[in-house]
Image (cartoon, rainbow, N blue to C red; front, side):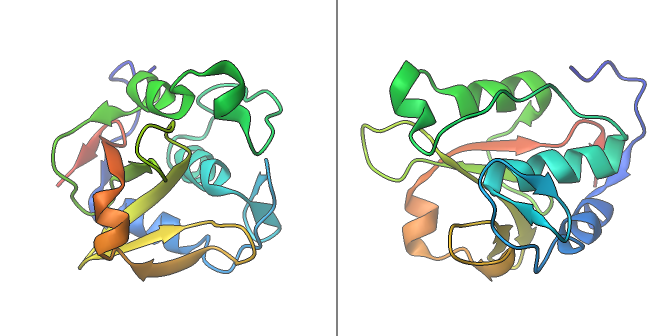
Length: 149
């Protein structure tokens, strides 16, 4: 948990660090810039790049990880390690629920201008439009600790 002693980072720095992950191939459970990551791995990697440590040890997880336990693991982790906010600003982490009534299972980083960076199966980390479909499925928005405007 952020204890107030970590470095402060501008939103511009968060976006710069996130863009350094562009082109990283998709790899389930991974978080290695240039080699492979999934959506959680991208957020973990940006966190590591900003703060110099891993927020927590992540146990192995399957593609259906959230259905198995029935818990909002992704949202809960956001609440534990990031700062929840009501409106997305550049550099914020967005959490998505793919279907109504299902658990949140996807994360991306908003880079402003209606765009986000994410890792999704069968594609490298990419910057895409945060279109209407994506906006309708946002269920959480979090700021990196110590992020300043």
